[in-house]
Image (tube, rainbow, N blue to C red):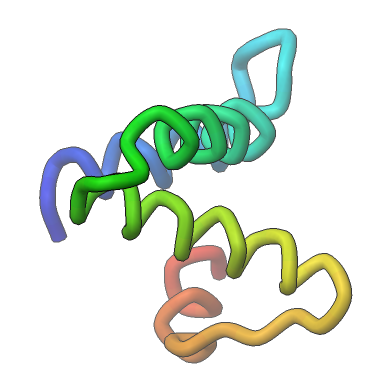
Length: 72
């Protein structure tokens, strides 16, 4: 697991900010996707943003068992 992944998970667990970290990440992805439409990173941001929006209606995790272990 990369340092970036560890820090993001740590921030999500800690929630030490006035705004929920997941909301900040969602809006950052949304803005990034909108401003970088013609790049791979923009396409990836759009894909993740879309997955988050879809999950509001029907949650689906590709690695549910790993996620559960992280948050035990």
